[in-house]
Image 1 (tube, rainbow, N blue to C red):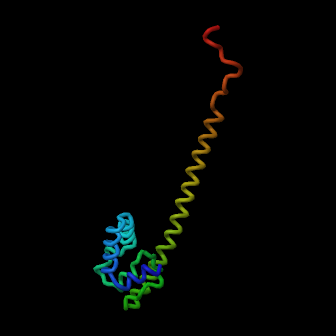
Image 2: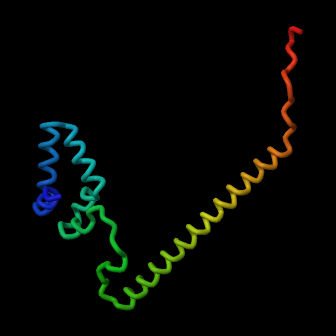
Image 3: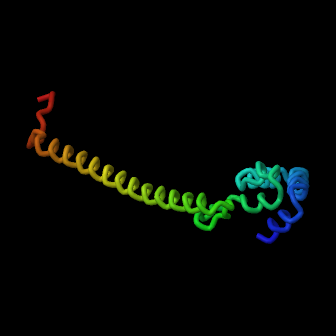
Length: 131
């Protein structure tokens, strides 16, 4: 997105100008730009300055490649904690999947038991009330 990068280089004034101009020329385009600014996080990040604004442009960051805090012990602790949390998340998602499968199996077994124990449907034509 070459246009987005150019507007980011010029800062929030450029974004505000484009948004206002879009509202004047064609209001749905202005509304779309406003939604994009809000969704991408640019609206709330304007106070942080342009450098941080670019880093928070709605993209997910890799925790392992995040900037260091300047404290090696804390950075090691943070990296180990994030790795442990990711492993726990994978384990928990596996547990939830097994729980769903057990619930589905239980419901299916109940359905099959109900079907086996149901009285057989009457055979032959039903007697009519006019006969």
